[in-house]
Length: 149
Image (cartoon, rainbow, N blue to C red):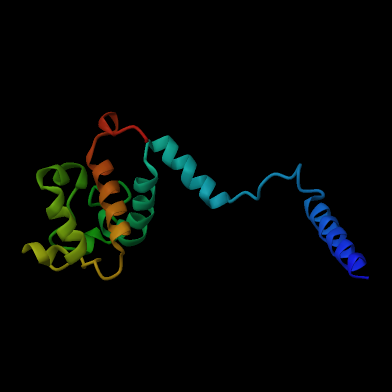
């Protein structure tokens, strides 16, 4: 009697495993259209994955004032005095530690206006690293941008 139960359980497991795999061998994985857009843009722009993550953060947190290309011409820039800086020119003038201090503590943390808020409470360390990596990419002319890794 026990032997019948053991054999029945084993056959049930084999049958369940066989049915679970039916019809899946030829199916393509489910596509993620949004991630496909980000991957394509990153490839076209020569950005690393970290820089691409930073670009998304920049679009969400910074683009309104600093503009899409970081040139200080965002839709809210006309309301601000002093105007947001052009990152393509200004970032290379300051060390990375200074730029990190601005992102984490806002521009007031470095003795400038309080118009750029501190993002250190909203963003994780990895997100700040990604944002800074993207700012580095913005600071370089396209011909000097680092190739993707």
